[in-house]
Amino acid sequence: MSPELNNDSTDVVDSSVATVEVAPGKVVEQHVVELKQTTARRVGTGAAIILVGLITALVLGMSAGSQSASFDLNGSDPGITVPKFSLPGVGLIVACGIVIILLGVAQIVRGFSKSTLRWVGIATGLLFLVAFLTWAGTEGKQAVQIGSLLQQTLFLATPLILGSMAGLMCEKTGVINVAIEGQMLFGAFAGALFGTIAGSYFGLIAAVVVGCLAGSLLAVFAIKFTVNQVILGVVINAFALGLTGYLYDAMMANDATSTNQPDVFSPIKIPVLGDIPVVGSLLFNQTIITYLMYLIVIVIDVMLLRSRWGLRTRAVGEHPKAADTVGINVLRLRYRNVIIGGGIAGLAGAALTIGSVGQFNKNMTSGQGFIALAALIFGRWTPRGALGAALFFGFASALQTALSLLATPVKIDSNLLQMLPYLATIFAVAGLVGRVRAPAADGEPYVKGD
Image (cartoon, rainbow, N blue to C red; front, side, top):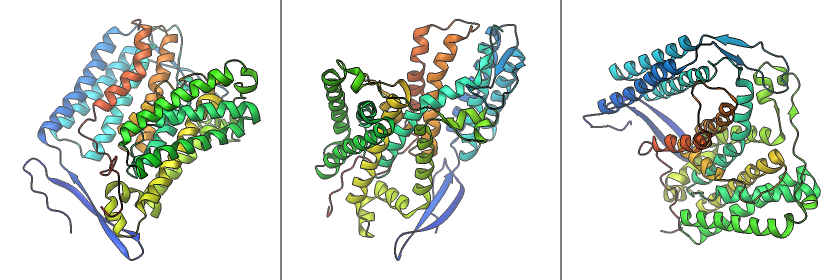
């Protein structure tokens, strides 16, 4: 039976019922109810969209150069090249702004459903992005390198995606993982050290194993000793920073040749797929770590929604006591997921050393573990959402480099460009305050028998 909702400001738009088996002979009905937006939220969201449209049409349109913008979709090592093309600068920018404004007006007048509004938000972001890149290229001095920008986005987003998946594995089962930063740092150090000694693939395995050990440290203190999980995560991060810094000075600083010069993974081009125009060089000419990232995201997404393990994980994260009553071993599941999450974070750290620069440096994660945690929150604790958020943050970092190489109509200060990824993180997460919900038991220790 669907729940009845009595509220003057909300109405039921749609509801559905799904029946799932959590254990042999135990069946649970899941009710999914979509509520109509309140008038205040509908108008507020529409006004925000209109503001973006006005900025696009007026600010970008009026400050754009007089030339057409030229675009190059080809990345490095393309299989089949696509010719460069030009688009009218001011006309395209204003057109994008008008479309955004019309979407905002439609939101105010009639309101979109929750699922449709999500796509409207994506469309608004893409239209603004097209307008912004067009604005950046209207000086006409060089083409906007879209292919290289997308490749750099994926490259920079890979450790963030893996870090967010590590956090997802923990938090979906009720354990807050603030220690992603430290786990990545341990993985980066192990990848560089063992990659130098025994080869890159051994370094990759070592990074995962060390990440699992760091995850075990989090699991034991958070689950067995019920230490405050946020404080515990901060302590593990400080421990990782201090220990890797000490080991770097003791082992690597004076003998980098034998301890800190691993071979970096070379891209592996998949036949046929790697020759597809634009997307071939972007998606199918990557390192083994990026391909593992694809696999991890797909497996977690499918398993979390379509397997008994996924259902039990979500049940433990929402109501561990109820899960325990139907025969689910809450503590064992939490141990397993947190340790696996640590291994994924270790792999993310390896992406920074043997997947990127080819050496370890002190504090080289530079806050990327926290950005991965922000991506998890921005993505509403879902694999696809975290993937999209991590790509967004990776794009902000890649855009910083791309803009520094372009002669934009209005010069952008280099300090502002360096702030861009972090500003994007702050605004993205701040805009979701009060509108996202973590798993209900996230951060709550569970003691059997309570």
